[in-house]
Length: 388
Ligand SMILES: *Cc1c(COP(=O)(O)O)cnc(C)c1O
Image (cartoon, rainbow, N blue to C red; front, side, top):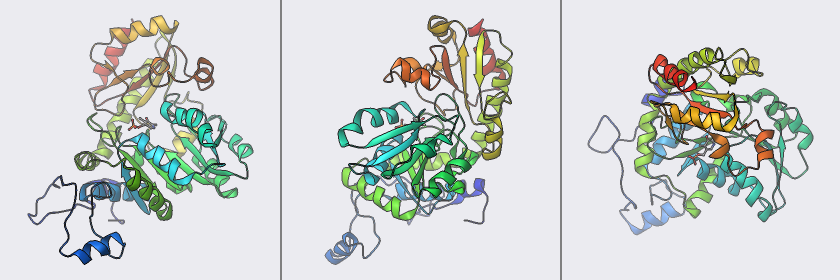
């Protein structure tokens, strides 16, 4: 499958089949697996023989999803977990120990930020933030005990684009790991492993599912690291259900075509919204006005589906705008076929202090729009009528 194109791989790779020769993959709803002999079971536990043992470890559906995601990201190996946060937390716990230090971009997903600032101090793990607009800053923050550089690009919700080539070189120079949360772009739009990234993380809940149905998390990358993460996950239990793995693997079949349309719709809506005098700022990676437009064009195949706008007039006007949306719903999710509006300052990033929010551009009037797959004019018209 390595010689096939992305679209083909996403559809054809790695389908597990039962003895019934079904065309579409079945769901393996079983907690445990059976062994012909006691010695077969012993050999499986001793890692002498590869076998399914118990669904907290692996299952045909979770294996299929992990293998497909590895192939699509160009990774050696992969592991799937119950949610994006399970993937992030399991990765951190498997790799870090007391006394370690992490360098991260300052604008990270709200819950990731909370792991850093609430839990890391408890475990004696240090962290330093670099400004996503200035990736060279990361170099100065590296200490002898720095284990990895962590980042998202584009960032949530400020839509900053971080130069993966620059960060990849810094990580290599100082021999620290590079971990990228590739949730916003998906492997269709960018493959961070090409720039020397060691581990790529996904909240599969978003574009991998694409229809707002199930939670899931993915980590792919270097085999030795994945083995550590897999082991930690299998011992501590944040396992992905077979049903969710099956849904996510099915969804991958349409990932390429969905990302194309999300991106086409988002570019159209962003371009049109830039003309509105009710909006202070529109941010989208493929708008020429974006501060990192050139970097986005270099490392991304398309702009993705997320736009942020800053509504003029502050929080009250912004709340009113969101309440006036008719078709578009207010929800914390993103990457759905339905367009979604989120107010990060009062929801996903409410645990940050006002000061921390402003530092990463989360203004009171900022609204994140996850542009869906509806007709682009219906999306735009709903936004325009709510603004007016
Ligand atoms: C949603 C999200 C997460 C967390 O994923 P869950 O599946 O909700 O646990 C992590 N990173 C980014 C960038 C996200 O958007």
